Structure formats: C-alpha cells, structure tokens
Image (cartoon, rainbow, N blue to C red):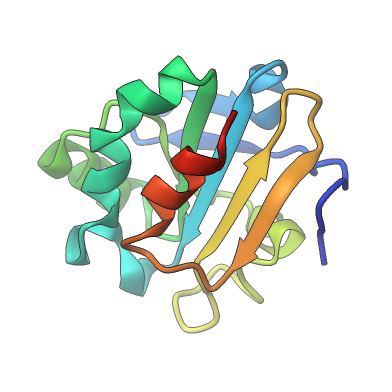
Length: 146
C-alpha cells in the first residue's frame, strides 16, 4: 500500500473528451487524485460540485485535480456535461491505476472505495487517505495545501 513519501506510480488515462493525461504531465505542481467508485459518482452527493466550486482556489495553490472514476467513458462524458466540470474528470481505462493507489481490488463498483491522494511537485505522495468523506474531502485537502 502506498504511503506518505512514496513515489507516485505513473499512469495514463483519458478524460471525457478523449484527451490523454499522464501523471508526469503535472510534475512541478501539486496533484489531488480523487478516486471514486461508480456507485459513488459525485452527482449523487455534493463532492463533485464541491471540487468544481473550489477549482480556482486549487489553481491558486498550483494544484491540479484529477477525478478518477470507474465509470464508462460515455457515463463520464454525460456526467461532465451535466455538472459543468472544467477540470479533468478521468475514467479508469487501466485497472492497474486503481490497484496501484489502493482505490480498488478491481475496476468495479462492487470492490471500489473512495481514496484521496495528494502528490507533491516532486512526484512523491504528500498525503494518502482511504475511505475519505466524500463531502468534506475537497475542502479538507484544499486547506492543507501550502
């Protein structure tokens, strides 16, 4: 299991419009990874819009938010349009992403759980949180970023 200080495993995923994102693309910035299972897609509660609403504050702290779901690309695109996300909302196209970060035993909603990871500009994990509170995590993570 990953822990504070570990080098964050590289991954490549595609967003809702098909753009490829690599973790290494954001070296030099803080990155918040927000893993959530399909059953907890942010539209069901408030956390998705909370990340969106805090986007400017995250950017001011040199931080990128990557939301990694276990939905299909089509469901992700529909969600993105419905809730007006303008930061990368990623679909886990490689189950090893979830495995590496401890977010899922498999890329299925039945075995997935919410995980929050903060990666520093050096590519190392600053914070790793399992079973995070979906409503509180966006503001909590923001308040701890320097």
